[in-house]
Amino acid sequence: MGLLGHIPSSFADTRILILGDSLSASYSMQQKDGWVSLLQQLYDQRKEGIILINASISGETTAGGLARLDKILDTQKPDVVLIELGGNDGLRGFPPKKAKQNLLQIIEKAKAKDILPALMQIRIPPNFGKRYTQMFEGIYPKLAEQTNVALVPFFMEIVVAKSGMILADGIHPNKKAMPIIRDFMDKEILKLVGR
Image (cartoon, rainbow, N blue to C red; front, top):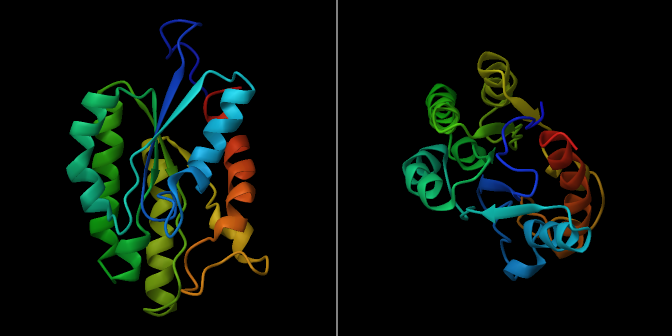
């Protein structure tokens, strides 16, 4: 799914909003060392014409992202919004149905402003048992299909399998993982914008 016909001018930069949680908010490190900043540096070097706007906050839930969304969309005016939310809902055992409703509203708000939404698949630790984990993770493909938006693979899956890439908390990527996430997200974002 590309942005063909979406961007008003061939000279305009494509503005991509990252609406995420600690996984995208450079948790435990400086902002410049996080994957979003590293990817922006890469786009600048390549003169890619992509501006990444990082609106990620550590601890953010789907409800928090929804509550902040209108103001962010009005001030930042993105062309694309990549939704990387739900991990904190899952870690706290929030009802999957409620998370799905919040994500749906985020997608609908973006579409109403002619902004292309994309949803990132989220995976959670099995703290609340297999049934809850499956129900929670299952909302993403269903929602992507229901709303006809791109489902971006979860970037943590590529680093979690490698040794020495996760902080002692067992959840967050460390500084060494960030260039790997950057390269993964580079390909995914270029696919989203049809390049």
